[in-house]
Image (tube, rainbow, N blue to C red; front, side, top):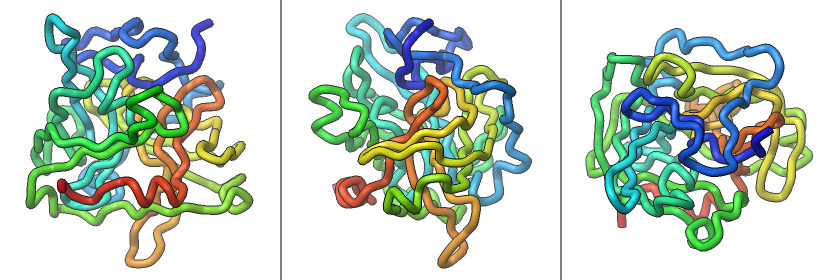
Length: 251
């Protein structure tokens, strides 16, 4: 039995090889009982149009290694994701990340942007502490303008517990770059994370865990960033510190 770890470990390699050992100690299988994931019906419609397929390229000291992940648009130039999608414990900082919002297989309705400008907390870089597993990909201006974006909300623990939530992303065990979604409820909450028995797979790290309903100007709000498997699977919780630190554009 492999212990729980970042979902990047089970991501489908760009070469279409499922690399189970690239990140030691990480779990691939994160489906909790029956698999409740379903294909996204239309990735060109919000909120799925604001969820991004990521191709992350790292340098291993000899050659480039590429993996997949998920992110979401907070603005036209800021994609939020898991910290380990940007800075890996083994490979260090990504060389570049390609961002495809609303991608569905070969269909790339909104194009692609490539970035080498990132933000991750120093606590993540120094020790890869799960409480700080979040980050931002900062895109060249003007970025994307095809969709509404995700809001971010910090909720007190008592309001977050048992909250109905949804997540959607790009699991590596499905056809390449095909988005899937699933719903469930928050099972437990700690100061910096929350857990759920929602099915995920490698490649979905960085997916938004968001409100089922829309608020304000018709936006869904992200309550956490999916990072880890293990049943229960878990997210980095959106707390005031996360909101303060995540940038909305390149400096």
